[in-house]
Length: 272
Ligand code: PLP
Image 1: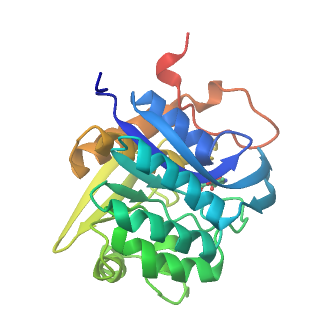
Image 2: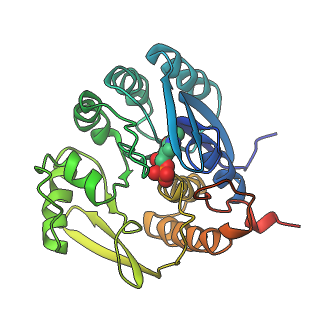
């Protein structure tokens, strides 16, 4: 029997506190009714106060996981999160270039919000060179966009025009679209800008006032991947993903927590 359940391959690092990383990807896929397979890139040790340790897995082992799933299963979207280093980026490019027909959402995870480095400088260069050309959508925040576009980090430009130039630099590298996420900025509304060749569109949602935002970027990009896996357009998938993230942030407080920040409540739709 042929399954109609959409399938996402999430390629990302493990967050043992389960707010971000591959754990967020699996729960987000489940919340959207998609089946998630995984390729684990790293094991991180972290709690609600931050990241204590990062162990990258062997690049060929990461690529082998992705390759095994892609060769055997009907994957309908791929999501990339924490990749760690250039060797892993390059090994994945070797695999993913054979699957260009599958929508690919690239969350360019560089630093955790607690400050820990999750992608090396060489890894950033390898990502720009090899992964941007394969991405349907890349979902940077402002500092990741500056970094990927090669803008000297002398502060972020304050206008949409500055972002447009930076996004254009990424589009020139071959990615299909850039979603500049605004969750980490200020203001009463959260503005995410979608840049495609020749067009820019803003998505606004009321800003949810909560300290419990750990894993928001991973979750947004996974939710978009789940929508694309179901055959939604980019705009439909982004709209639905933003609404899901807002709702999951609003009820994050209800989750069990430690001394610091909680992650968002991915499975709020299934709470009993
Ligand atoms: N840990 C892992 C494994 C991640 O993939 C991410 C995602 O960006 C983070 C931590 C960062 O989480 P945050 O910056 O939302 O706290």
